[in-house]
Amino acid sequence: MKVSKWSENFFGTPVFDPVVVASFLFPLLYLIAFLIIPVLAMLAIAFEYNGHLSLHWFSSLLDRYYISLPPSGEFARIITTGTGEKIYYIQGVDFGVILNSILVSISVMILTTILGTIFAFIMARYDFPGKNIVRVLLFVPLLVTPFVNVFIVKKMFLPDGIINWLFYDVLHLFPYRVQIDGLVGVIIAQTMTYYPIVYLNAYASFINIDPTLEEQAENLGSGGFRLFRTVTFPLALPGIAAGATLVGIFSLEDLAAPIVFQGNGLARKLMSFQIYSAFTSGFNVGSPQLAALALVMLAIAILMFLGIRKYVSMRQYAMLSKGGRWKPRVAKPRPWQAVLIYFVVLPVLLLSVFPQIGVVLLAFSERWSGTWPSGFTTKYVESILTQPDIERVIINSVMYSTIAVIVIILLSLTASYTTSRFMKSKLGPVLDSLSTMPIAIPGIVIAMGYFFFFARVFPNTPLDPTNLLGFNPAMVLILAYSIRRLPFAARSIAAGIQQIHVSLEEVALNLGASRWKALTGILMPLILLNLLGGAMLSFVYCMSETSVGITLGSINPEYYPITARMVELMTSAVGSANLAAALGVFLMAVQIIAIVLVNVITKQRYSFIGLT
View 1 (cartoon, rainbow, N blue to C red):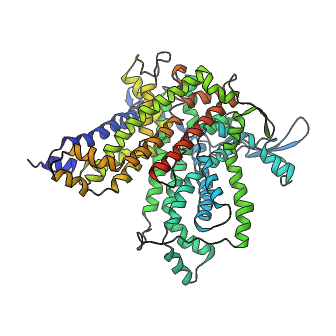
View 2 (cartoon, rainbow, N blue to C red):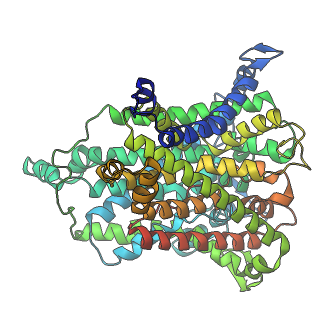
View 3 (cartoon, one colour):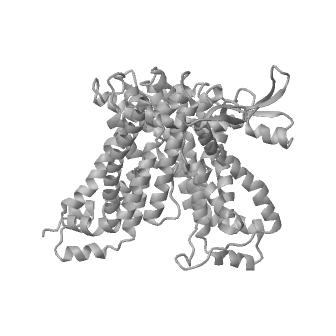
């Protein structure tokens, strides 16, 4: 067979192989077409002014509405109700749309890092009664119930909410009733939603630390907080930083909290809400200024991603004995530590899971007045099966998600196979970077890119988002889902391929099997559990997709996905928070089933559910 230098350089194989070439080109061209080109479409619009290349639209974002220094407004103030009662109202100050978004994102990163690291350290280092219950509770906030859980968070911090009932009426710790709204409300809601992401990453880092390193530090006189600060925390930093970066990007693109808190003007002054409101109002959605704002958001997200990765890469975290066998350092907490765990950490955890509990209560309640819901009913849950418009959105979401998952598995399998098996290829690093890039790209940016791309390439067709009554978002949503959720399935499948030694395929090839036969007959059966696990997790992610679902998916009501219907129920004057909660319970049930199945099938201890 003829040896080709060209084939060896680009595809990592000296002999031209159509299966290998197709495995490289399919995901590469797909990602270029539906990830890179839509972003370039936005670039073309944002940098054009009166037919010329210009920074005009970016300079227009220097207006005080977008960047306000010094900030305006009062962070908090005391207001008096009609009954004469004083309420301490906290909302934050206004730095302008762009700076508000950055500050909210950084605040959420800091708070989730603190919470997630504390919970992870306790779970990794201490053995105490009730630990398994705490382990389960730490996963509850990852159950995605778009908008409804934030609705519960908002109710928790109302003057008659559970926080004031506990700390003002029962414990008498507050001098006034407290109400949290605006940017502060957004920060708290996002923190309660996202801290388990840091917890999962930090926990994995803590249990993988070689205990002999900490023992050596103790022998040299270190201990307590100094040991944690100088040895334990630095070794766990890569995992913690990875979780914090994800949280920062998710906070930047989050729409649920700004939509629920939009009654306060500050919550509307965030980049994600500005782009979303253009879709819902129908005005300004095709504006070059909006494209420039989306690109600013993209730039911030990528800088956060690259900045944290650069910081982590500048330090050494390798452990010489990594790969050996050891038992993690787990001890019984001292009396003062037990007091902190049971009377400080555990109450904070219980408060953080209340939003998900509240979603279930709301779904089975007639109303929610005051601190607690009242009146038991099953009519909202039953309406999922009996109300035609609700049935339709569920069927739509299942159809979009199923087709997207098929595409995701094909993309993940081909991309993971080529990058794992043909590492000498020059296209390998490019494909690997492209397949992980969607993690750093906010969903609302992808939605904007798709809007401009499909409006220009397919004008006056069912794929044109500006054709409001004739637009069918099915294909657009499937493409967006497949791009957004690709990295998570790819990670699962790549891990499976790396565990299968390449010699098994080489034996089949040496015995005369074709590359296709070796791939389908040897490799795929051996990684079947990873394929199934990745497929189920991707399906859950697609079902709960928010950013694209409530923008492009909300243009034509006939084709709504679940999340588009939920936001309509939460914001419409004739909507029903109880019915939205019932849909939230449905999504929670889907996620719990997926978690159980993935754990049973792949024998994994943890399943990462909950990204919106």
